[in-house]
Image (tube, rainbow, N blue to C red):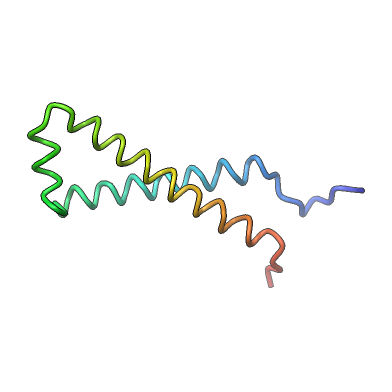
Length: 82
C-alpha cells in the first residue's frame, strides 16, 4: 500500500478544523453576549462566576462546532475537487 501526496494528513486536518470550530464558537458566544440573548449579558456581568459561565459556554460550543467541522471535513475527504 503506497501513500500518495494527495492523501490528507489526518491529524493536521482534525486539529485545523477543530480550531476553526473553536473560532466559530467564540464568534457565536460573542454574538450571544452582544445581542443580549435571554438577558445573558446582564446575568454574566452581575454574577461572581459570570466569566466562568462564559468560558463554559464557549467550551461546550467549541466541542459541538469543532465536531461538526471535523465531521464535515471527514465526509469530504474522498470528494473530487473539479
